[in-house]
Length: 135
Image 1 (cartoon, rainbow, N blue to C red):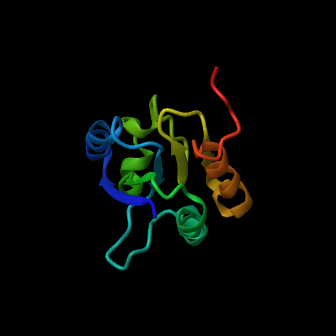
Image 2 (image 1 turned 135 degrees about the horizontal axis):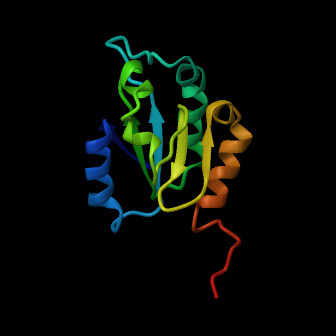
């Protein structure tokens, strides 16, 4: 089963990536909008996709992977010009977003409502299932 590691905000996410990037592979980063005390995000797209994403994590993510679950903050922060999540190397333009760390693979927005895309995403990014052979 994948390890889920929560991160609240940019700095905590960066610290966790530095801690784990040479120890774990693959690392996936799931960005979502901050949740209230009742556990509901201010981001309606995040709320709509959450069940599908969590199901895909349980059924399709590699068992030995790490999933960094990143709270990008409240709506005001997310919309701000100084939002570091929007800058490289993350370049997150919308939430929810799922990326593979140190990879080009990414799903965002409505793509995360489609289990078939999530299944393909994990299949293509799992080193044990990948059909690519390095030479």
